[in-house]
Length: 79
Image 1 (cartoon, rainbow, N blue to C red):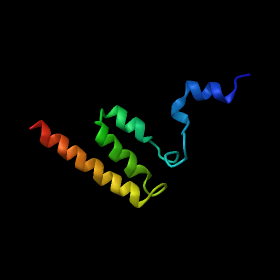
Image 2: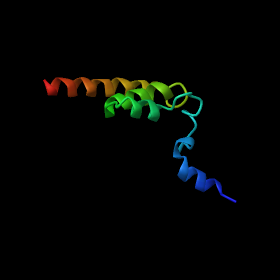
Image 3: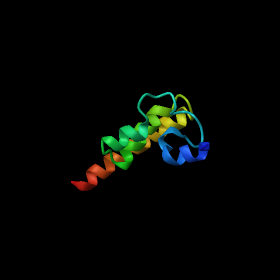
């Protein structure tokens, strides 16, 4: 009979390490980020937007602002 660990290894998307703040979403942030080929900073914004009410609240909102500022800097540096 298979054990739970085997399923975790086969279906890592069904497991969350360090909390449950993404579990209730119909589309997981990692899936949205990956399928839309978002940049690192864009992905961080999506992640923190999804979790801020359930995890670190104001701190996560501040992280969203920080990653937006980093994305702006990256875009300006490319010009």
